Length: 558
Image (tube, rainbow, N blue to C red; front, side, top):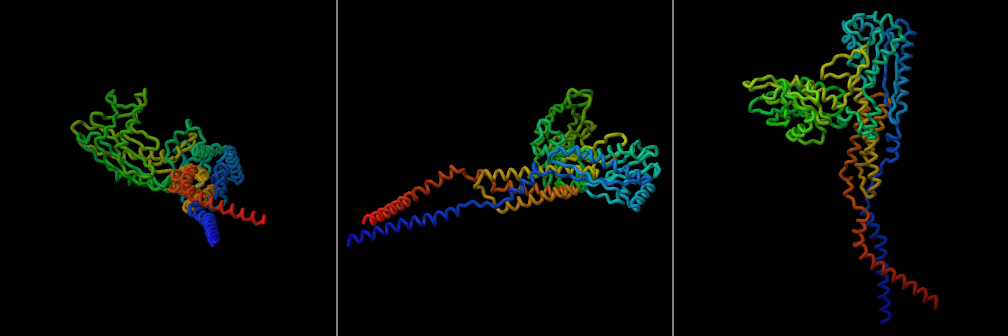
């Protein structure tokens, strides 16, 4: 009876050991594995690699339309053929570039009704600007990426170019009027057309923009214009400050609101500028702000070495005190010097004779010294911001990346604009450059994200990250398609959306490498947990297995 009880007890122990082992192996371990599994949504790795800058060339298409009011159709055909040959040569120059390809699509207007209507506008106009405005309205020249050349003989209206020595007039619209003198052959008009197109298209080197955006360009020789520009973003904060160094002796007032509404707002509301992002404007008065300039007096003038400007800006920036924003900010400062240190100028040593009152700081903003001729008995100074705002707008253009205007010869006359006005074709060059920047930034961000996720295997990839990456990829594809079709505004908007989605995915709070333990630390956590539980279970299973083997051997011997 006692032997039978021992066998029952031994069998129960064996069953308990086996049960615990089975539960541990087939229930506990899978449950632990499932509950500690890292969720990683699938990402389009192959698509991102195929659309990378290194694999896929960005094609920028420019449309050039020619309206030729010449006497014979063969002369028009010759002119159009020479233009095509010239543009083809420009395409070949950039074909050796790795990542950017230029494509020019030329179109010749042959409809008699359109040609006659353009000729009527030229005849009816009293000056060249009136003619360009009328033709621009007639042809509806409001499409980005397009430019129109109107070539006509001088006999159509000799008075249009009478006040100019030029043969070509580049309007503020996407239009140029070229007058063909009666003594010039059509074939000889090509240099004028070439100079005109160089003026319109020569302001931006897209290959250089891309190489600097990808950091493949030598940082030591990076273009100064590119270094001072802001990166594309969803918005920009503009702050205007009037600095009065000694308000106890001089009371200042300024008409900042009127100047912003009269000059700055029309500039920011331009279709090309407002596409860069939203602009917020703030203003303030700052008293008792000593810039520690230490001017030197000579010949009745006070001058400060330009070498002191960085230290002065550091002192000023600590006092500005505008609300901290995630958006990039630009500061524009009007500095009113004390009565006993005016007029005040800056100079580059040792050139004392040439002074200046305004300067630009890359990616920071600008400062203008507001000199005055008040005497010691005067205690009020009305600051005319209308006098200063054109300088600030010029500085803002450079900080936003608007290309400088280049006139390659005296035969080209540019339309004269006010400080807050812009050339439409100048906006096109800006959109091309910003589109390239956004595409390069998107490509770099997505590749960095994939590299990070590949290195940290246990990093969570949420559905939100997957959605942002897919949206970024779709917008990037659209941007390149729009660029290939020459629709610059949509190409830039898609590129900016792609960049924003990529950055939103990369800076997701869950993607922080510090939140995840290395493998060695995981073992340090789980070994003290599983070893005390696992060893007894394992030893029990081994004991049961040995008893089973022993019984089998005993049966065979019998």
